[in-house]
Amino acid sequence: TVDGLEAFAAFHVFATLLIGATASALAAGEVAALAGWLGASRMGRLWAALLFAFGTPAFLFATRLFKENVAALAVIVAFRLAVDEGGPARRALSGLVAGLAALVAYPAGLIGPGLAAIIASRDGRGALGAFTAGWVPPLAALAGYNAWLFGRPWRFAYATYLNLPEAAPTVGWRAPDLSVLLNSLVHQREGLLLYSPFLVLGAVGLAALWWEGRRLPAAVVVAFTLALWALSAAWLARFPSAFTGARYLFAAVPLLAACAGPVLERASAGVRWALAGASVGLTYLTVQAGHIADPAPLVYAVKTFLSGGGLPVLFKETLPAWLGIETLHTMLGHAEVTARDVIALLAAPAGWRLALNQVLVAAVAA
Image (cartoon, rainbow, N blue to C red; front, top):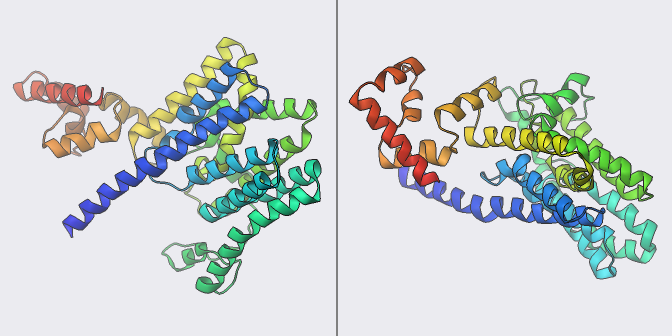
């Protein structure tokens, strides 16, 4: 029913604020804390946290209800609990959170073996036992759930894709082509490094961490990131039109952003601001454009940015619909109306009303 759809939409907005925005905000705080553990000063911690919050998909996931930022928050919390000083209770909590990450998004659980290696190398078997005690129960619950619903502990819900139109013929492993791997990073449909280029400095930070002697934590971050990259590319290889690297690789993004912290403060101001400006600008384009179904999403995002005055979807589309008014942006959204038509309208009273309505929604947004 219409009432049911409206209630669901209202609940979705509430859940987005409660879960999505909160998870991204908490993850930004964890990025700052981990950057400090890696040696960043206050300036480096702030740069890393702010660029993670506004220059990565964390910004997008704070405006919509996704599971990826919740899983990424669990990953970085588990990592910090593993590398910081602490006793068995802290190690058990690290294992529990790592296991919960797998419950939220299966690939995020790949962080578990790396954290176990860090704890075993530094604290010995006793701490490893504590970690395992926390890590195993969530995984056992997931295995039981899969066995109950899908017949095997290792058979996931993704197998239901086999029953969908144009579905992949199988969900088994398939080696991805080089093009798929590259598209996950630089394709204009959510290529991770295209929209968040400052993360390249995370690789520089990992190299510095290696040469400083903290090799195992650096190796764990690298291995986790590469595993996510290979696994997601193998999955996306079955769907040639899908390039959602920014989403599938996001569990590693907080770790990479934290590793970029010490490098950001040492980089020249020109490099720092150039990478920051590109990351925040491109990320904001994708957020204010809303769901981009266009085959050239970056071009579409620029167009809707210009016509909407840079406002997010809530203000440039949802608010006028609630108020029952037309603005310059909503008028241009009609298929039969061109930009030339809108410009011609500005010479008439109707055009001035559109402009005033545009100013109204911009004022509310501000």
